[in-house]
Length: 285
Image 1: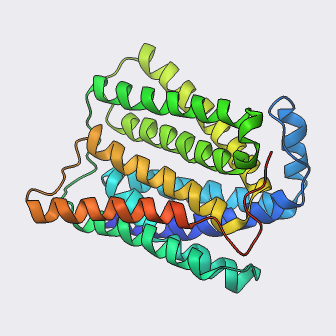
Image 2: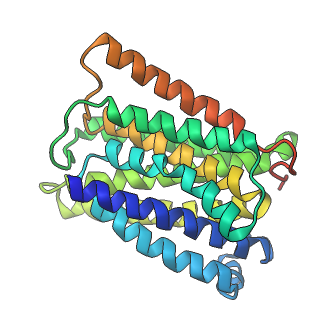
């Protein structure tokens, strides 16, 4: 499990750097359109910034997969979320992007809250990939409904001012959906091919839609608030999935439960503080 945690740390660093590279490339590309997927893909592939970010993200994803195969998902995602502070450091030092004090605080609260959650988990052993069919279907079904609602909200003219936020939330939800499904595959040793084939196909489709939502969100928002919000939603949701689907245990005493409730409160506060005030907010669609 220690190797899995180390791999998660490497994945966190590479993922944050890759997201900033993709953001730089997205800002210089024409807006993506889901009805023109090939044209949008060619446009993005023509950006050296985006191509470099996508390649690094692919390597980070492999490290993430390896971490999931060795450690519980709640612990892996907490490590990834705890690395959110890297995002602000890399953005400011390497790319010269402004980071408000409020955003520093938001990233510290979010990363600290999820790290606190990981520290208060009981001692874990192994990858903890076992699950019940009802639990994973119920959780993934709930995420699918949430993603559908966010997609419909994005198309609503009444929510035009929040299109960027909705896209970031949608991207994080789809990433979480795919992450839970992939984690489940590691514990699906006795599942038949008739079930595995559509499961893998649905996971792949969700991953593609997640990438489209990520790019669309990156094109409409500032780097810190967009990347931070996507990561916060994806990591917090997968940590919840670790508890509800894969049985990652919560604290066994009242003090531990109180600390875990505090951790979730810090995550919620982080989400509210991420949008910048002095900088342009997430743009409309």
